[in-house]
Image (cartoon, rainbow, N blue to C red):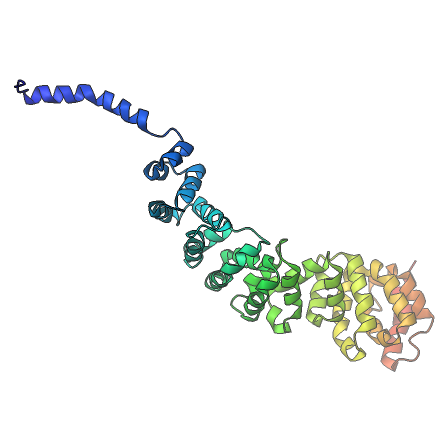
Length: 346
């Protein structure tokens, strides 16, 4: 029978063996995420939450519910969790889609989950209902706009969602912010132009349209012929390049019905204040060839303004008498322009 050790002796023995035990434990622990994944060591991966470790947990989650629980524990503050969930969706792992939908449905982590989603990817379509719900819940802040940008990037499958969010005044601004993102689809942009006027009466919507008109001819043509006069007024004082603004007026004054021209006078005045040199040849040509536009042009010109000094072609057209068939008021204004502002045209 072995001798009985005193309490002091037992404590001394334990202290002597502790370093060896710790060394043995360290030797057995995984050295990296790859090794931990091979061992299915969920505890180690959870305790060492690098991007590689979370990705490994995502792969293990395909067959081990404990890994899903470990991911769930970090879902509120770690975007890598949602990246792992989206990767699971792309490989058709059963847990991926429910996990992503649950996150998108949670206001506390919807934005983080959405940030893991790619743009312009049709695999997002099954998540449209959750994305739309997130826009509604988060529309008042930047987060709603970011999620709306994902929806706007999808294309025709998201057409109805984009339209609903534009019609809804609470989400209109967020949706227009989303349409303004570079990844927005042509379909989303076309919805913005097609909805009723009051469905784009938000500063973000106006900004989106003007930004689109700066680079897209089809939108520029729509601004010229189909947009509400208020949008023309914004275009007049916006950063829309003057050559493109001149193209708008050439089309607007020649193709819009004469009964709408009275609403164009102030926007044209504002455009002349900013872009008179570029508008000069356009207005001169319209005075000569577009009789229906003559009255609106003369009403927009300030007879005593400094703009006429740089509008040699327009002044020459006025001297040709193209306005002689107009009302007395228009003829008088044209005469004042020739006598005053045009006197300095060179």
